Image (cartoon, rainbow, N blue to C red):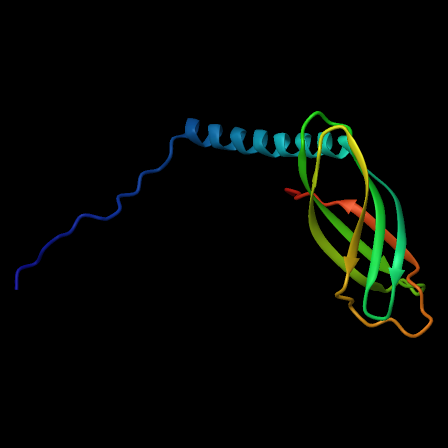
Length: 137
């Protein structure tokens, strides 16, 4: 049987130092741009008047006001969290909302998947709705 020498496949070449510098600078610029856009979005979106609408042992309805002061329609992600009087988290949900430009509206969110059922007579203690942003470390 004849011996066949094969070429290395795929052939590996080291990147030049200038290409590595461009990749590094591009990564730094991308992280800065993402953080800058997140800061602008946080300035334009206002969440206020978070309150409990209705609640039972298996669900909690949150009511809140959402305003967009920007000039563009936005699709944003919101994080809703509810705690009991002991500081344990009862429910949390990540959900998307479309907000039209220069508008303010009252909205509600039904949380029907609780971490634990609420006892009879127990009330939710604290609620928070915040803008959910992806963060690059």
